[in-house]
Structures are given as structure tokens and as C-alpha cells.
Amino acid sequence: METVSVPVVKTWHIVAILSLPVIFGVLWVCSIPPGHGPDEEAHLAYIRVVREKGGLPLLSFSTEGSWSEGHQPPFFYVTAAVVSVLLGPEWGLRWFSLILGIGSILAYYGLACKLFPGHRLTAAAMAATAGVLPMFSFLTATVNNGAMVQFFVAVVLYLGVSPVRWKGWQSVAMGLLIGAAVLSKLSGLFLIPFFVVAWGRQWTEKELTFNNFIRLTGRLMVILILFTGWWFWRNWLLYGDIFGWQQQMASATALVRRVRLTPDYLYAVTVEIWRSFWAAFGPAARSTAAPSVYILIACVVSPGIAGVVASRWSDRTGRIAGAILGGGMISFLGWPLAVPWFSTISHHAGGLAVKVLLSLILAAGFYRFLSIRWYPPQVIRRETGLLALAVFFLLLGVYRYNIDFPQPQGRFLMPCVAQIVYLTQIGWMAILGWHKRWIPLVGGLVLAIAGNCIALISYA
Image (cartoon, rainbow, N blue to C red; front, side, top):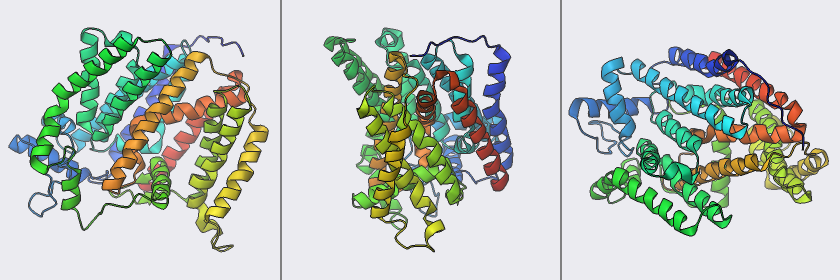
């Protein structure tokens, strides 16, 4: 393994790099017309009810008080109602969202510093890349509860799963942070199984005794029940459903319906989540990028994911798994979005057989050239496993929601945007070697800046 030297970096270099997401955030706040954020008018209506009536709205799609976000937990809206008195409604609340976004970026920086201790420039570049992605800038420049859950998730994952942080008052603080994420948006629920599985892994690896595992899990559950239980109990009394999803479905029967869980539906959701995670702007997320953009993104991201998988093993198993995953990502996620290119050549361009064949061809190419030049130290491998675990549980929650309320939107994955970026960049570092880490760091940041500029100009 290559030696890891620690460079000397001045503080202003870090500040300059981390200022990039802030600059783009300000530009987006000033450029987006009122009401053009995802469901922004509905979020503002919820806040007005809290501020003017001192209560929470009931979920309804009626013409009298159309509060379609009534199923959302209240923490963001109560906080925003207080903030709106100080900063003003609408534009003032957009600045509040941007402040939450800045807090998330700082937590991303802290998380990257844990991955690479002493390499502050590397950490800053990774955090800035996550913060300059167009959808991150867009969502943190509009009024929505996504910015708040993103912030709390970032802070919780930065603090980590170490039992040392769950002693005495610290356990209460950590539990309250997770509870704040849950009461900001239900996607924060993924933190609960994430911690349970992470602690369970520490127990199986003898880093944690069984008694401590039970104590930590029980303490987390008690704190969450005390802090968030009232909200779920309220939903049960009002709607007969702790999440309010059934009432949401009943109130919007003209818009959505429960779907059958089929492979075709799951695949369609996957493609749409992939597309809208990178570029889907406007109130209904209808403003998307050209097909060529998604092909480019797939070609950039898939080698990184293949590399991070291959680098976890030092034998042929890792290379095979990485090659199959990389080839499949391009074929099944990038290719369908570029099918319009080839429709004039063949109407079979988007068929399953073509995608499978293309996957095998690309997997063979990946395997041929997937030579790992840097195997991350054990501490980084452990952290990348935790990053992937967080993304996995969040993705499970998104799929579960899409069964009851079909709405495959990539913005639901934004709480784990840093994890997705970091896994990709670490994979590229493994392929290129530690001393060439500047290529994925600079390259990723440049691509994110370019994409943000193009999206900002075309949308504004």
C-alpha cells in the first residue's frame, strides 16, 4: 500500500473551497422565481397555518385550505414559522434553507476529515463537490423540509456510531438529533435501522459487548419514543395510520394510486430516481437534462462505484463484483435515458436483452482494466461500509414510500448526497492510486461546478 503523507494546507485554502457551495447557493436563491421549488407553495401554506393559527394543519386536498403537506412532521414548519417572523416569509425562509445547507456542508467536511485524518484539502474538495451538485444547490435554495432533514442526518452521521458518543448526556443529545431528523421528514427514519445494524456489526466483531448493544439500542428507542412518539400517535388518532400515508392516498385519488410491486415498476422507479437525483428542477421536477448528460454521469460514477467495491477485497472476487456493478449501472441506468438517440436505428434499443448484453460487454471491459492501485486502510474500509449502509437504508425507505404513494424523486436521496459522492471518489482513488487522488477530487469538483453553472443558466 502506498504511504500517506500529510500535506501542509493553509486555512484560507479550505475556506475558499468550502465557499463554492455557498456562492452557488446564493445565486440559486436569487434566481429561482417564487413558488418554483418542489411543492414550495404547499410548504409555505403549512408554515402560514402554524404561524397564524398556532396549530398543525390536517391533511387535505380540498379547495378550502389546500394543505397537501399535512402528513409531514412538524419540526421544520414550526421552526420556519418562528424564523419567518425574524427574516420574513418566502425569501427569508429561502435564506434559512441556505443556512441549513451550509451547516450540512460543514458536517460533510467533518465526515471527510474522519475518512482522511490530516488531509484537510482532500476533505474540503470532497465536501465541496457534494455541496456544488446542482440538485443540492437547488433544494437548499427553496423552502422545503428536505434541507432540515439533510442537516440533521449530516450531523448525526458525522458524529458517528461509536458507543463513546452514547454515554450519559451525550446519548440524550444523539437521540434528540435523530429524533429531530425524524420530525423534520420521515426519511430520517432510516437512521434507526442504520444504527441498530451498525451496532450489531460492532457486536459481531467483538468491538461491542452484547449488553452494550442492547443498552444502546434500548436507549435510542426510549429517547425516540419520548421525543417523537406523540406525532405518530396523533396520526393514528386522526387517520388510523401512524405515517398518514393512507389519508394522503385517499385525499389525492385523482393524482396517485397504490401500485403493484413488480420488477418492471421497481426498475422504472430506479431509473427515475437516478435521473432526478442529478437534474430535475421546477415545481413538478419536469425540467431535466439532456440524455447525453445522464450517459456522462453514468460513465463517471460507475467506475468509482466499481472501484470502491473492488478495493474492499484483494482478490478476483472484488474485481468481478465491481465489474458487474459498473457495467450494469451504465447499461440499466444510463442507457435507458439515452434511448431516444437510437430509436431511429432500432426499436429494440431499450430492451432487456440489449441491456444485459451491453452489461456483459462493459463488465468484461471493466474487469480487464479494473486494476486497484490503492487499497484503503481498514479504518476507511469500515467507514465506506457505513456510508454504503446509510445509502442502502435510505433507498429502502424511498422504495417503501413509492409503493403507497408513487413519487420516484431523487431528491429523497439528498440526505445521503455526501455518502454517494464520497463512495464514488474513493473508488476512483483506489483505481488511480493515492498519489493521483487529485484527479477525482479536482475532476469531480470541476464537473459539479460546470453542471451547476449550466443548470443555473438554463433554469434561471
